[in-house]
Image (cartoon, rainbow, N blue to C red; front, side, top):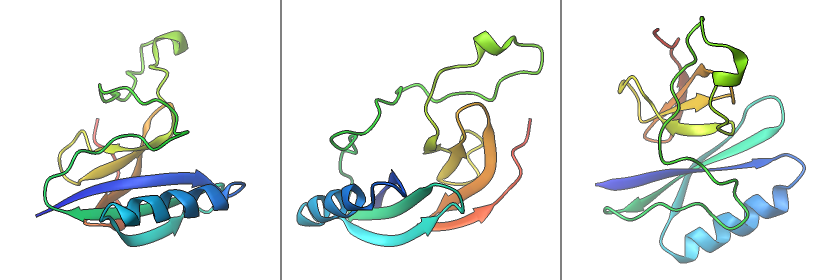
Length: 122
């Protein structure tokens, strides 16, 4: 059994991604895959053998422990949760992770470190 995590960093800070991956490697984490979203972010999918705690890395934006829900069409913009764009547990349960773009769930998903697309279901 493996525990998976994702480390994301802006293309403007590749040295920070490298430093975090080096730190995680010393803790027993291994890189499964590094992807580029085609815009401004690198995403490193990592895994650790066994069940280990996953915590934000130093300097990472604080993320809510409550997963965001896709905003309903009738909600005003002020009701959308202020959760940073990042990979989170897939609320549909079909994949390990799904990308939240800061306002809605996207079609970008990942399982076992492999990224694919799956349109979100309402």
